[in-house]
Image 1: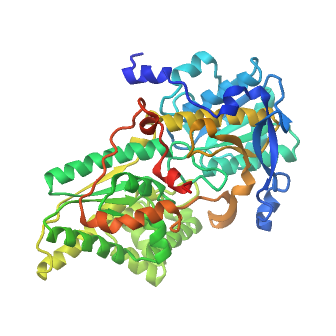
Image 2: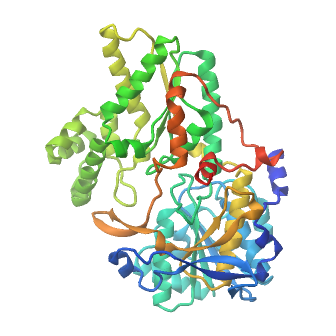
Image 3: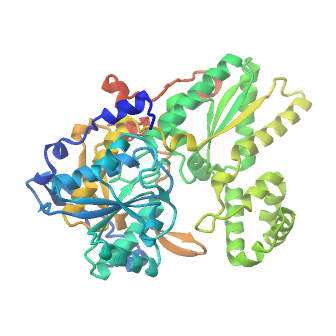
Length: 553
């Protein structure tokens, strides 16, 4: 196989881990802190998790607490959901951690995600297989998948496969949905007294799987830096050509963490934050008017160009659009079989419009045909509109252009409006992980191995102090149930891990808000450049600006 010089160099990189892990996993013990989480959860959540609710946060300390068992473990891992940079290092860290617990420990991987368990499609992950994937992007070592482990039959099948293979534990490397299912599976394992442990690892480039105790999901750092490089390149092009407004949609359905981080990194003229839109109950028309005003102001000073960042999930944050999407979701969930018989978009659109309430029907009718079509596309696994397929950036461009045409006809806009639109998604999911993500994922994997060795079940691997140098990070585990909330899925309330949204009174957003008016008028773009893997720590090892600002004194 031909490999690039950078790939060869990344094989040689030795991830940095917390001092406690570097000194020897076999010397550490799991200490139950006085931080039980989930004791005040609603009764409906507690009813789902009677055996795993209310457990304490675990911290690993030398010579204290529940010692790691010095015996060989047989552990399986799955990669679940979309790719995120660093997944291979989680597996490498898990492999290394288990070998440090006992050299005869063995690690297995089920191929293509949770579905691999149900199909018993498994491979042993040996050093010869793991080593070529260290510090590389992607999930191709065993592949990933979006099958959901959530039914009693699936849980029984999992136990059957694990017993046949004599496996002690499962590590679920995934996002909030995958870790929600890990929590359900852990409760089942406890209830059935199987002795099989389930540990989660926080993965998602969207950055919305975090809490007071889980400071970051892996992959966010690398993906944001990848997108920020591209935005910086486009901003340099825009200020050179001076003739295009670039509308750039970024990943992040429920949360705008990527858009906010990229705004802090690149200083665009406009960055829309979905959470602010929702809090202020801004309409689509109001958002369009804000964009138009900035375009007009810049045009008056001779700048007919600019950068607009749009989060993927913006359309759901706009009140009238959110109400429309919710009504469509409920309508199609109730009449799924009949809707499937409608073969043309025209028939689907007519039927939906007839069934919608008056206000929602009006909103639906005012949308361009292509946006209507995207709202009626195939549902996601939860029966909801697939927001990532909606061209929100194009919708904004069309509406902004129409409004500017009105102003031009009235003599109130004399400038030019030429536009380009982009969507940065897959470009960031499989990049070579940054040094931060390489180090963080190695630590998460080793921590997951140590949680297993200390007998934990229903925990997510967690590392705190991430804004500090990696030698000072603190490894431990957080009870998965403590991160739960109730959410409507397919028409009924279901326990799920709560998504972490951008907090508008948090330091990252306040820092952005303090500068955005100046950025709107000036072309004060910042050019972060490509991810740096070599050189001084202040260049190569820096965490995201979001993480630094969140933990700034």
